[in-house]
Length: 304
Image 1 (cartoon, rainbow, N blue to C red):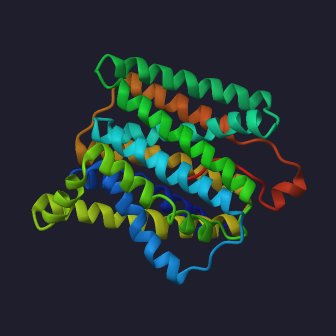
Image 2 (cartoon, rainbow, N blue to C red; image 1 turned 180 degrees about the vertical axis):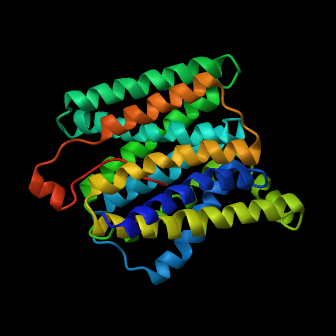
């Protein structure tokens, strides 16, 4: 992997880590499910008119859109709205990688190696320690919602595998067409039809401007720029070389939340976080035959 590509991979990890700060700012202005609908609607409209539709089966595109877009961000945004620490959210979402391995074994009959199983157990142990600590701070429900977001992402990963898109970025952009209507329906049902409208009428306030800036970052920087660079790196390099850089996302997220939001992790959280990241890396990467590695084999570690 060229030095330029390594620097780009680190750059994307930084963009995605800061994405959680932007989400925090967005949720300060918009109700969580309405914010999710806006995020994908702003991507879906230009995508329909400017991006050719990927040549994949519709059911896999719908499955990825509902799993990655609707379910993941509904759970994540509500969790952060209810008090899930921003930095910790960036870490817990990494559970999507070992979840993908387990679901692949159960649903797709993929073989799980001993190293993968060890990594999954390490990640579970770290998550358990974090859950135990969060339960002492009455924050267990947001944590569980974030775990469900990671599980939703894992289901979406299986849909992407079965879809086998020739252009992952185009597939990701078209996935954004799926979530807006379900997210709006959820918003109307649980947040009320007036909640979203009220958030739009106060965009000129300081909080509104910050929320707009956060939403713009999530849409333009986190999704279009970050995913575009990441897809390019995946095409130019073996996936097993690029994918581990996504483990820098929670490191950036935890660090940024400390400096920007004043979230101070405990020693137990830091230790458990290191265990989770190590477990995710060990459980997600599997040895490949030489020919497959050269062609960029399948790895489930994904970024934001």
